[in-house]
Length: 283
Ligand code: AMP
Image (spheres, rainbow, N blue to C red):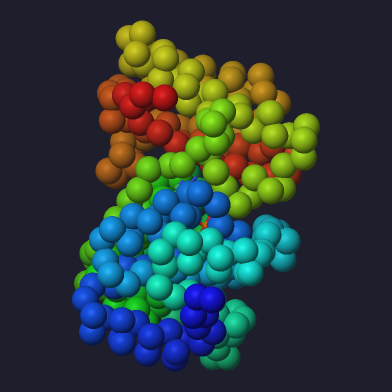
């Protein structure tokens, strides 16, 4: 069975030891692992002889009304998957107090990249994400850490933080892994009822619609966004946001080009799903 580390102290020690053998790669997750997470562990294994996967449902990135308590968990299954994918050990803090002990009061405050999109609809979310990831980087001193483009804004915010704070960990982004029909894999897909699952495909359909219109020559941002909103609507999804942004600074472009990304967050029932992709990419 894969070694399971339960305390921050032991995690630091395990990483120190691992780094004697060469570079260490980190894969932070919230668990309930699927092929998206697995793809990150596999890519990390290509990059470094030792891979530390972490599993922590980080309370600091959830608002009080969000799904922290009911977030799906399966530690046994996760450990099996981590081992099969090539992780060397797993850090799963024994509880929130392992990362946020009594008296904890210092948080990382990300800048403008964290303001639009999920930053606007989930105030404080990226502050929580940055804080826990900074702690994981500090404990592990990993050479590199792998993150999915599924959470594209998170990837940019973390990369910026690592750079700005000289954390010494190279932040590597990896493509979105999808179901055969196009739905982006997510631990939250487990919430979807059999009636909501087909509706959830609306995110992918909306992205495909935007790509098709772009391929047909449409460059007008409001027109493309309207087509996306209509597609979400047709699928009975309630849009949280559906916006085109540039892929580097997340600014609103005057006109769309192939690198312009569509960012979507939408509710299927109570489940909030996100997806994104570049307009010029093949579907
Ligand atoms: P989470 O457990 O949802 O916090 O995700 C942990 C990491 O896995 C993050 O870097 C996510 O971006 C990444 N991830 C989640 N879903 C996918 C997916 N479908 N494809 C690729 N990476 C993903």
